[in-house]
Length: 198
Image (tube, rainbow, N blue to C red; front, side, top):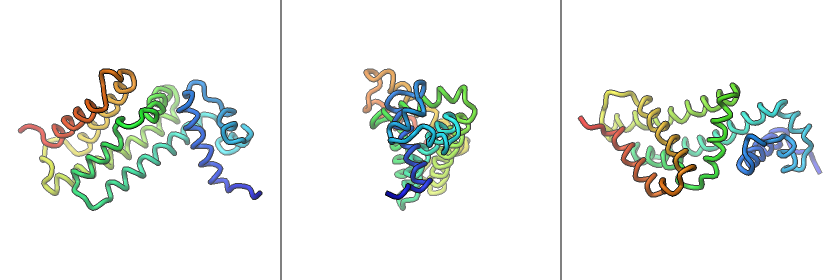
């Protein structure tokens, strides 16, 4: 049997790391557990990533880039800016399985004490804001959104902050924050941001 290319092995390790974080949390994550998922030795995982901290940061970057890839594809379709913005926001929202949001909340908490992980999240956040801001600018140019005083970047930042906070509420208060309520609240919030009262 031929050995796998390093890039393929690296992607498998990153995916397994995210699965392990989803399964048992970041606090108890061990390189040995990631290796066991793939039938590898822990030393091979360390060979690719040097430290557990570097592995975790790379795994979150990998997961985040996969989400961003989907968002960029939505943003590149030929529909109206409003339709694309709505779909990108729906993709970001915690309305499907909250399993993936569990890893992000766990990661944000760890990022408070890990500069490399914090930098990873900052880079992903910057990309999300750029996608939203470009759609807001396109919608303004097309006359779909009101030209308010705030920049598209500021509006994108507020929308993401709202969605992130809502995700935390949805994870911890499942009875009070239902999927239907989230959709209703986000729709009202985004409408207010894009068409503020004069």
